[in-house]
Image (cartoon, rainbow, N blue to C red; front, side, top):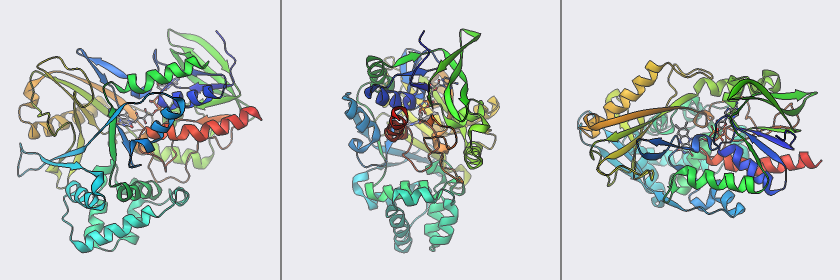
Length: 479
Ligand SMILES: Cc1cc2nc3c(=O)[nH]c(=O)nc-3n(C[C@H](O)[C@H](O)[C@H](O)COP(=O)(O)OP(=O)(O)OC[C@H]3O[C@@H](n4cnc5c(N)ncnc54)[C@H](O)[C@@H]3O)c2cc1C
């Protein structure tokens, strides 16, 4: 097997594939070294009792206001790959102690602009807003909307909570902003102001987030399969079943990687290249020592440590119900909020099979759940104890049971999928942003779920990063 390349890409998820395709388009020889038998990372599908379901991610989010403005869309257009999609309402359910069995319902409509923005915050935080509070919230949002990307990059060291306390005077507006934790998935004290400013500002300019997913198929077939084909058709090499254990660095320069053959763990192979792209989540790479501490400057190491302290695995669950319990109309996908704790508490998402394009056995209903991690027991690089996982899963089922009585009784099969979700936690207050290029090792680059704290939400970031990354690598390879 060939083992000399211009570029080695570690990891064949959307991040590795995106940069791989762009380099292949430029005629640069590269290989993707992937530990699993297939490419796709967390965009892959799984078989669940006869249903083909997206395994981790089930929709795409954009703050850009239109699918055509997302990085994925631009990427697919540039490569001439087809992309058929549909936009779905961002619906939310709220269950209160006063009315168990009844679900309060709010569907986001970005077209309504600022009115939608206020309604959404009032619903999601449970705080009624008068005109003074609305004016104050609008003033804060406008400050954020007016900030340039460069300005946002400069304030990743500032906590959003501190910014609110210093800049928002009206107590109701303050309460609404501090109450955003369940919406953003992390306490506001842990969020860097640069990230929030970009997202919060986009909220009023675009009226809210846009949720979209493939028109008829799974994410794997829609996004991954065409990229794999494009990559290999343009000369890219795919090496699967190889777990990279080391990035080789000599005299401050990347030289290649060492990988173990998963079918024979004692067989170590060396792949040589002057450029190595780490396209596994940077936090995972550091935790597993693929990325050695000496490859990091102290401020980088500290940024990774802080993000890792917040990181946690997300739990995605699959339930096959004997009968239809969840009404299909209006409940394609919901966030479940549970007010048992005094304030609305995000406990997870619920998506029906029809929403995720999964095929369901006739007469049955497939329900997908997503329970956000970030528990106090989350630890750097480690999977949380199973009792913590089961507790999260149980709490989700309890809340869904309140909204749809009979849910637990109707479950015929259930399964779980625990995945490290790094993206969500890349919003921590950090001393410096981790860039796409190593600060001290020449030829070492990062793709996919690396930190880059002021970025796109979720996986669109992988595609956004691929463009500047390709330019920098071409410059280096050609020099
Ligand atoms: C439960 C969950 C739900 C999510 N929901 C959404 C969503 O709805 N919308 C959205 O846009 N984003 C969502 N995300 C985030 C999205 O999945 C990530 O942003 C995206 O997958 C990042 O792509 P990546 O290529 O960096 O990493 P991955 O998808 O993790 O790919 C990394 C690849 O590297 C391989 N690898 C790892 N270690 C090694 C090694 N040592 N050697 C060789 N190969 C290795 C892995 O097997 C994998 O194939 C979700 C994530 C999770 C966990």
